[in-house]
Image 1 (tube, rainbow, N blue to C red):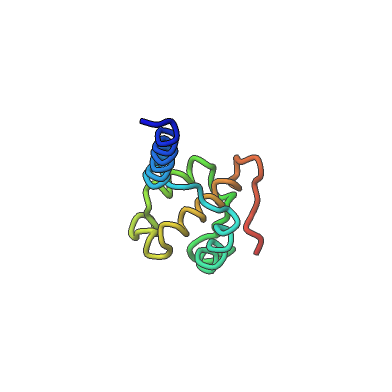
Image 2: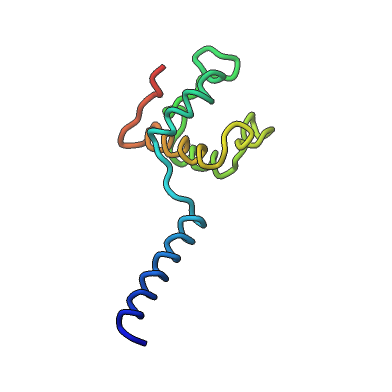
Length: 112
């Protein structure tokens, strides 16, 4: 095999491996987009003094948020999270909530 062909084959193999890993393990979400989706989709039902209880990133620790999204359940386990947002948007919301959880280096509320 020629050197240039070997290099090309190696680059393609590494690229395909990275794509498979991203699909298998999920690409990291966007906290910025996640904040938007959280405010638009979750906050209307989870505002302060609502019957569902206030929900902000500070409500849980990073581990608790990760476990919540891993379980994929909403409404105390009665509904799938995907009823409200698709997997990509849920990934973004998770990134926002974990990045700003009560035990994170940059805790915050979702501001309104």
